[in-house]
Image: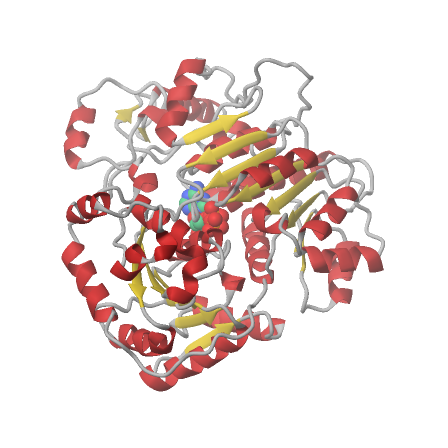
Length: 565
Ligand SMILES: Nc1ncnc2c1ncn2[C@@H]1O[C@H](COP(=O)(O)OP(=O)(O)OP(=O)(O)O)[C@@H](O)[C@H]1O
């Protein structure tokens, strides 16, 4: 692993020398003090961390006194106790401190403030706001329904990611949230888990015959909505929790029919949801949670009015806003949507995730096609499955055909002009491994969890550095290492300054033409870059790729009209 890479995952991983040191230490009191289990090592049966502590009353491996208490409580109840859902409370104004405790295990002490803040530092979590609830260390620690905890385990979620550790308790205390965290860090589950807990609690307690939706998740693309709804169904399985997908391209009557038959969560794109609400009378009285996923995109011109219109039809819901890229304007706008918002930031938002190696190649537009063919024909450089991002719909179709002709690879394209059926089918073929390359416009750039993808190629660099961060992020999930190959030339000068900053921060090589361009004037790319380069163990390989890729190509590849999300 290269220096500085894989920090978010690295915070949980210890080297074997750290390992020996830790094993001599006394029994850990709290589960977060324990390290992650290395492959083949015993795991704590409660939280999945290293199970170093053997509890006398059982043969199970346990990591700490905290998890021992939980385990003993479970044993005492003979079977696993039915976990009661946490009560959703409205905090009285001026309340100084509030902490989510596991109501099933009240004997577990809460941490002192100083230890909470050192825990947050350790997890790379920053919070802003009044009385922010403490982070949780395991899913069973904040009163989630037992079935939901079971579904999480089945999905392979042994323990929460840092963003989930902080967002879940904050959300369950009914507060509105503005959350920024790295791409691929688990933001989706961080809002779905509290939504599912809330919906199933309401439905199991409800005496009225209300079957209207209780929560709405808005996202900017159909594919992202599809993915979020799919994940919601997996996590909510077996609970009184049904979902409706409201996106364009699918028949509206079916969506209406589904909602009329009773659902808890609507996942939709703003345009189609507005359309549905105008044409049909959906009772939104009980919608108490409103999520804006990719909020910076949803509050941009184009989506903003629609998102606000939907928000205004709700009665003071809890608002949760998420993105890997957030700036001050969004923060200001978020305050107009909700009061007393908690801001949570995890890892390194507003930058490409450290897990992705960025290889920027200076290549003239007319040589781009030849360059991508060279990469895809090279066993060394091509790491399928791969996503290729382009700026136009026509470009996506032309390039996918050209790659097939030049390399023999089967390639599909996805963009806004295809029918929903085609988009679904092409995404399915790519995700199931039937085809190894997808050429896409920005529609796959944000939020898409393309699990096996470790390589993205930015054939056309996007218009903004934020979209760049999201597209690069498709090459890594949960801290897995990936690579982004980025084609750049003078035509992309609008983004040069920010791109150079981003590359400098990541210690990535900067092509000579980019470093010397007058459009990067004012951005220092001198010795610091050299120092960073020389400390990278793979620099030989990287510079070889760059020099190879700088060799020329063939025909021009026309830019076509910009695709919109
Ligand atoms: N606690 C967990 N344990 C294991 N895997 C998890 C956990 N939480 C989420 N994941 C997995 O991590 C991957 C990334 O999660 P997710 O798509 O929510 O990231 P994200 O932060 O929304 O990224 P992006 O900003 O790119 O949308 C998914 O495959 C998800 O299933």
